[in-house]
Structure formats: C-alpha cells, structure tokens
Length: 100
Image (cartoon, rainbow, N blue to C red; front, side, top):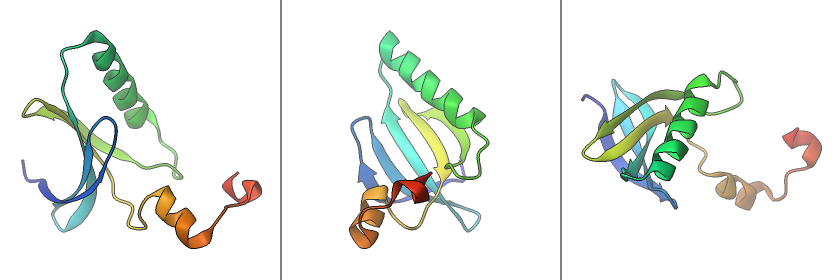
C-alpha cells in the first residue's frame, strides 16, 4: 500500500511500466490488466514464477507481485539507464563477446 506510482516509463504489448517509490527507493512497477482467460493466467503465472525464482546478479530482480484493481502488479528492480533500445542508441551495436 505504501508503494507510490510515479511517471510512466513505457508501454508494452501486455501492459505498462511505471517508476514507483517506496521509502526513498525506486522500483519499476509493471501493471498488466487481468483477464479471465486460462492462456493469460498460465502466461502470467509462468512469468511471475520465473521472475521470483531467478537469483542472478545480472538480471532484474523481482521483489513482489500482487493483484490490485483488476490488474497484475509486478514490482521490479529499477534500472536508471533506460531500455536496451536506449542503450543501443547511445553505444551502438554491442559485440557478442561483451554480451556473453
């Protein structure tokens, strides 16, 4: 309840991502409109399970997920350098050995 939704960071096929704040810490809040559809439920369940189980320092961390106002809300680590597309615009193509 204390998580404060701030500005919109982006729109995707499945929903929107907002910058959010809690106790002076920034997060990314992914909001996906909930659908009463078995295929949707399975996709969201798999995404949330993968996010919560992933413990890799090189991937975005998932802190919480919940349903609020008929939407699935996923609280993620906030990355302040923008999207991968933003990074590519600044630095150009990234060599495969660096990505690896």
